[in-house]
Amino acid sequence: MEMFYTRFLNSYMNWNLKKRDFARARSLFKRKDIGMKRYFMAFIGVVFIGFSVAVLNLSGLGVDPFSCMNMSVSAHLPFSFGVWQIFVNAVILMLLVIHVIREKKKIGAVFGFGTLWNMTGVGLLVDFFTTKYHIFFQNPQNLGIRILFLVIAILGICLGCSIYMTPELGSAPYDALGIQIHETSKVPFKLCRITTDLICVIISLIFGGNIGIGTVITALGTGPFVQFFNEHVSKPWLYHKRRGRYAVRGTTEPIQ
Image (tube, rainbow, N blue to C red; front, top):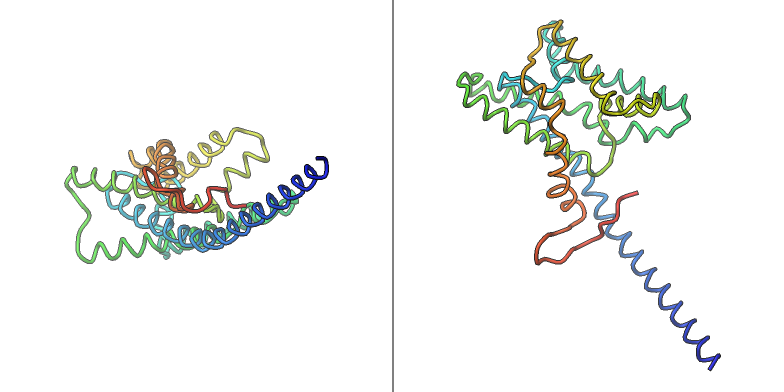
């Protein structure tokens, strides 16, 4: 009886190990598939953000604090908004890298594909979409159309941020700035972000920036919308997860 029990236990353990190995191999295969999708999602997310910031600026009702600062400053320089924003992002990224090296952290904490694409892509995409719009149309004057532009832009920015951040391929230098200040000073992250946004708004006011209700909404009111898109769009898209009567395809394990 003891011998039977020992054989049964060994067989069960071997079967269980094989089952786990198979599950692990299947998970790795699917992670490779997810890996390519992560880069695609980061790319598409930034395109959404660039398009939406352009629409928000066309509404004339204010843009997000960081874009507002760069737009107002670049208006007084012989550079386009996109080129100036790349320069500002590069300076912030350089300071972050120096800080990370001094703190003996991994460079990956502040840099990735998403970081590079966001810091170079958003501003240039705003320039591109704005130029294309002005070829055919003038800035909207009707308040109803401007409000419609505002709503479309806010939802587009939230959707873009969700799609771009979910793959976890690095955040924009300006976003990483608040995180690093929080981790170093132990000041709550929300307070750190409000402080950096406030500095951007003050600089925008000095240079005559486009500050309005859109600035306030993007600074304080986008969180719930981003979370909604995370749960209903970005995560199901990344992990092949379907709701309702359809079975779940793929793994829902977070990417390490």
